[in-house]
Picture 1 (cartoon, rainbow, N blue to C red):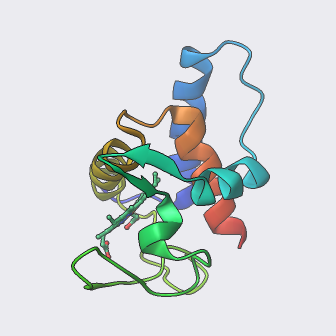
Picture 2 (cartoon, rainbow, N blue to C red):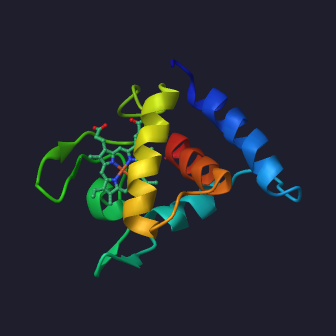
Amino acid sequence: QAATPQELLDGYAAQAKQENPAFTGFSAERGAAFFKTEHASNGRQTSCATCHTPDPRQQGKTRANKVIEPLAPIVNPQRFTDINKVEKWFGRNCKDVLERACTAQEKGDFIRFLVNV
Ligand code: HEM
C-alpha cells in the first residue's frame, strides 16, 4: 500500500488521538530518544540503534551481519512509503526490542525524527 511519510504520520496521529485524547502531536526529539534508548529484552540490552546504528543515515546490520539500508528518507527515499512494510517491521522490531507493540505515539515520533535527520 503506497503512501508518503506525511500520510503515515497523519494516520498515526489519528490513531494516537484515539489511544490518548490528550495527544498533542509528534516530536523529533522524543523520536530520537526512543531510537537510542536501550531496553532489556530476551536477555540482552537492545535499542533501535543496535541494528540501525546511532546515525540513521548510515547502513546498519542485522544480528547475522546482513546489511540494512539506511532508515532516513533523505538518503533512502524508499523508506516510509509502504504502509504494510512499515507496519510489518514496527511489529517485528518493537516486539524484539520492547517486548510489546509500539504505540501510535511512538511510531509517529520515530518517523518524525527520521524524516527530519
Ligand atoms: C526495518 C523500525 C529495531 C532490523 C525497519 C522499518 C521500521 C523499523 C519502521 C521499515 C522502514 C521502511 O522500510 O519503511 C524499528 C524500530 C526499532 C527497530 C522502531 C526499535 C524499537 C531494529 C533492530 C533490528 C532491526 C533491533 C535488528 C535486530 C531491521 C531490519 C529491517 C528493519 C532487518 C528491514 C530491512 C530493510 O528493509 O532493509 N525497522 N527497528 N530493527 N529493521 Fe528496524
